[in-house]
Length: 240
Ligand code: F6R
Image 1 (tube, rainbow, N blue to C red):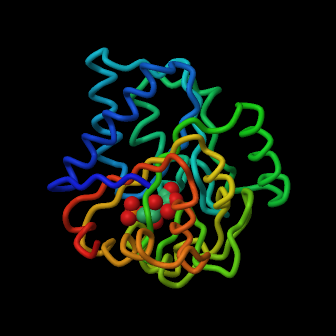
Image 2 (image 1 turned 180 degrees about the vertical axis):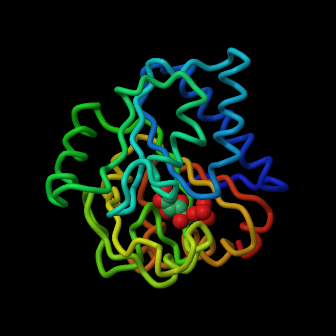
């Protein structure tokens, strides 16, 4: 695990966008794993700028998102389908046929199985972008007693529902279930780029870097991955 510490969140985002753009330029048909949440927003804005200025071309890139709520239609304003559309996809030239986000609807087993099959058909993920939850979750892999190997359905924890309620009218409106890549799916990516900014991530970053490798802190599994780069601002790195 390689750590880089930047002054602030903006510098983290600029560095992340630069690494992603370099990957796409060097490997135009790469498979990118993408995340939602607040953390990657400025990175996506910077990638859009780089696309508009002709630096990067997404036309041959394939994307796979980490996760999606269960029970929200794709067009729901809080669905991750909608998030990706609004914050990245509609602003760049990604081929719509090459975008993959697990479905929030339909038979749960079939959704999970199909997603893993699509990942395998695409040849796996070249570069996976990640945020981290305050409890150390990655994607929707919450603290648990094992590391889930593959895409699966989860019940969201109270802390994740609370953290995400800011996007909904009330905590009651936050979906209780989600579909997510497993920790194993993430570890199969050939390279991982985790971003974190802000003091509220400092405990999770400390646990990820210095704590025990345990499914109680899902992000700690990234220490087992041979090619993980972590970009932090000073506040998120404060406990290292
Ligand atoms: C998003 C995801 C989540 C977030 C995490 C941090 O697709 O899988 O694990 O990365 O909850 O969220 P933010 O960035 O909003 O702090």
